[in-house]
Image 1: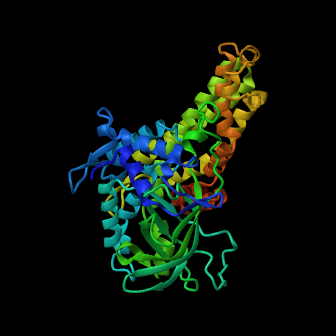
Image 2: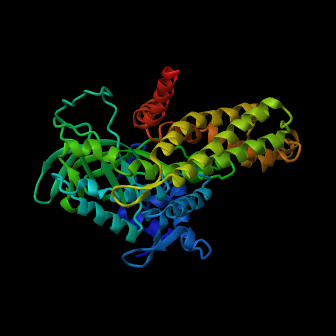
Image 3: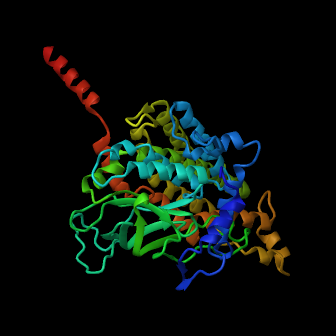
Length: 482
């Protein structure tokens, strides 16, 4: 099967009958019809459908190197700098359909898997490592256009670096047994965004310890026996696209993943019981540069949307003459153009990696990932400062259709818009910055790749400044001669 359609995606997810719990109840029936999931499933299906638009076919798909079927470009392993540009073009085409608000759109996980498969050489000839399984799963996912989510995080029981779990019943998911059929996993992991509405769950433990049985990587179908997704409260405000223009479409559920003696077949195990590999694989492989390239490309589109909202607010209430307003808008413009420059720089300075693939410059993308968690909360603040009381004077759409609708249109009008049009814009700004959905977006961008302080430390230790230090030394040595 080549690149799938939106209908095929929905039918596959409904047929899984995955074990999903929300508000203390198991989801029954078709999940695509559940109030907490139907909006995001429809939006995700729309992305798959775009793959079949005649004018977008060459932007979103390419010919598979094995089957010659058309498959998603987000699976493309880049060999040239032009391939990186091709990938970015595809990512941003999809992102524009949701204005970058779907952090877990399928191209993200496709990129994750592509990056892991591009690093199979690191698993060659290592104990309990199965690079052929990883390569095989990558090709399977590419040819079937499989949707995926992942879980990389352990429960927050004790965040000290030296914590070793002593509970008789596992808390963090671990290997509790193995047999001729595979490994047995028991315990829980966080934070599977879109958990339950994808075909597969990719699991990677990147902090193995000899004492606790961690250190593994695998992928299994979302409906595997013993696998359960327990969801947080839904942030969908309601069905109305006027009242909840973003959460009704793009609310990506987060879930706790529980493994109740889940059997992972050997052919789906990528590595296990190899602590050195577990501790270096994610740091050493191409996961970071390739996934950051996807993430930054999406964040650019999201920032463009935010800039559009801010300018629309300014025009609507006619505040563009104030210098403090101009200064705030300039902050967003500077951040946007910085992110654009960084992603292009990462492509220009790309190099062939040890696996033979064209890898975007890691340091450049790490800088981008240190920039965005700091500027995104400021975007939220700027919208709140400019919108002010207008972000609270936002009656629902039905109110405008009521006997008091004419009064609202009169008293809430702006220079250019009716009251209803003005409120529609401000409800959009509210949903992005002040609703449960919006505040989750801010938290999501703050911690997308982890704690910003830790990201800064990683940049500090990985950035090569030897050349610059040598220049200082040479200058001082030259000064001694005089």
